[in-house]
Length: 341
Ligand code: AHM
Image (cartoon, rainbow, N blue to C red):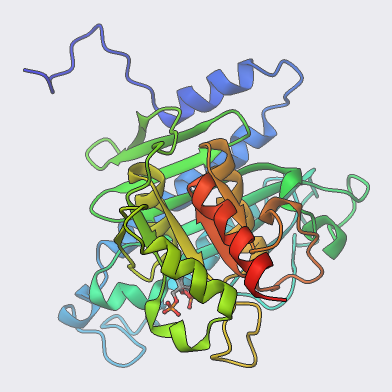
């Protein structure tokens, strides 16, 4: 009976894991642990809504109001508000920023201002919800740069990924998982719905040495630079023996490649002149996933330099992204340097 737990098996809840990690840092105040715990709770709340997606129609929602006359909230707005409301009053954050909001999100005046900054993409790939495809929330935590006790500023948010103290994501898929790092390996937890608890299921995740997949939106090929085109041609050669997998939901594509081995690319393209630097955002998507990739033995680059070394200049900065297997990602830099002058 290989799947039956005995009393000798260790069951590690996310709380126990965070506390164990905290013990390894005697100087820790526990604040970061609490922020992570609040984000895990946000993940559970968002998961409980995503599994009901589609039911609003059956239960009688009309237009933007449901049967009780309440406004039906879009899931991405619900996710955005949930993360904000669980973190606005705790005194642990100086400010927040969300992919869903144009400007920095201040901590309300009535609450104390803390030592950390939280940046998040509340529901990445949300257009996939309508067709029952996995989506995810991504979070990034930095230490503030400005003096403690004052309201956080843009300077606190615009930090390079190298300064991240924690990053992670929650994937809402066939099961809900939370994956995170504080720079001490990457750990994955699966939500046990019966218990309402995240349990450690994937300790110390490392990307497989041999990648299996590459993931790119091949339809944009006519808009790629010569370097990107030659690089993707190289990925397709027999020497790499890769299969193509592209969901179009970043967290899901990244998660699959993290566990099974592979590389995700969203290069710059000439399709939309308003987005010359690709589609994905440096602060909410690329940097936190790059931290996880590196901690799992992978690498992330914009095609020229490491994502974690980029100095952001604005909150919603977009960046080309090649992330996952280290050797494959480094090869993107070689091709781009050689063919794109
Ligand atoms: P969104 O910000 O509208 O949710 O878009 C982000 C998503 C990512 O999850 C995914 O990797 C990418 O868009 C897919 O884009 P495309 O359809 O251009 O391939």
